[in-house]
Length: 305
Image (cartoon, rainbow, N blue to C red; front, side, top):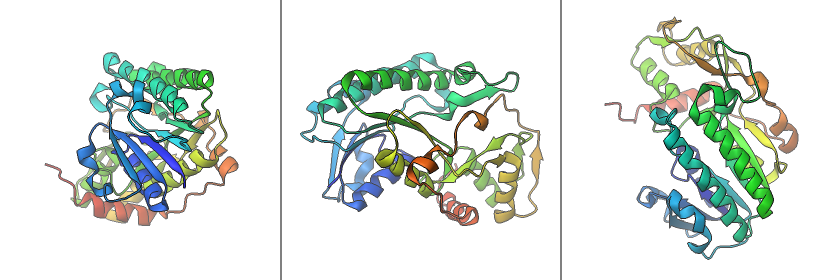
C-alpha cells in the first residue's frame, strides 16, 4: 500500500488528488487547517486527517505516527488573489515549505513534490523574458521562486528527493472560485458579452482530470530535481480559446477584444512543455468540448451573489 502525505488537500486540485489516492487504496495523511471542510472524505478508512496550520509545519512528524511516506505533495499557499503583491503575506509561505521538507525527511519521505507557479514565468508587456521574469511582475511570483529554491536547498541538506510542478490554467468540476475561467462560463450561460484583452498571447486551459493525471505521474515517475509543466500542450491565443468556449455554450455572444487591460502574461516559450510527456508518458485525454460542458454544468451550481 502506498503512503501519501499532502498539504493543500482542501483546495480545488488538492481534493481531486486526495480522492484519486483514496480510491486507489493508498493510505493518505492530509495536513489541513480546516478539517471541518473535509467531511466527504472522512468515511474512507485509509484517510488520516491532521489539523495543522503553517506554524505547525516545523513539527509535522510529531502530529502523526505515519512513516515511510512514498510521496509528499505540498500544495499549500497562502495570500493569493488580492494579496498577490503583499510582501508581508507572501513571505509567510517560505518558512513552512522548508519546515515541511525537513519534517518529511524525519518521516522517511521518498519523494517530495512542490507546486510552484507560472507566475515565475510571467513577463510584462514592456520587457523581454529574463531569468527572474516572475520577480519583475508580482511579489507572489517572486515568493514562489524563492520558496522553490530554498525548499530545494533544504531537501538537498536533509537528503529528501525533491521535484516541482507548475500547472497550466486548470479548470473544471470542483473549482468553487470566481476566477476567469468560471467567470467566462458563468457570463456565457447568462448570454452576457465578455470583456477580454486583445487575446493574442498564448494560454493553456487544462481540464482538472488531466491535471491530476499529470500530477500523479510527476509524483510517482518524475525525475528528481526536475520542474514539470502540467498542461495540455494545446497552447493557443486566448481569443481562440474563449471563442471556442463561446461557440460551445452561447454562439453569437459578443467577445469585446481589447476592452480589458493586461499588464503581464506567461511566456510559454520559457518552459519545456514536453518534458512530462518524455519522462512519464503523460497524455491529456479529455476532449475540450466535453470538458467545457462538464464545467458549465458545475458552474450552474455555484453561488454568484
